[in-house]
Length: 87
Image (cartoon, rainbow, N blue to C red; front, side, top):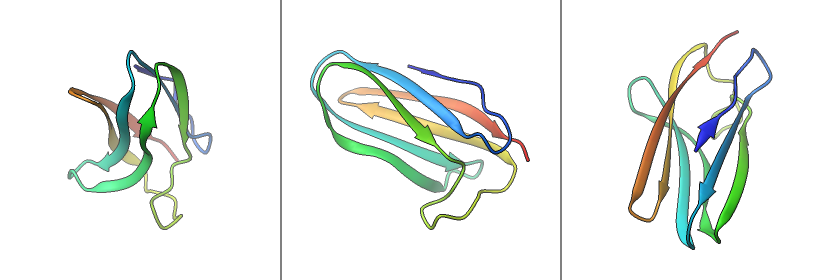
């Protein structure tokens, strides 16, 4: 999977491909490992998908500038990628 560039206020587009039907989750974490927001949590069929993170937490508040991770889990596959929020 891949992530597009993030710019201030624009958010992040996360693009990924699923090879077989899997339970998929994508979660954003802060630098301390705390879950900030769940973006995807469902069973998905094979294909290419895009999801968007608007830089907000589960309560709808904008997260502060800093370093964040997102984790994609699909079946036995687990991938993590780094992103920076700039204000």
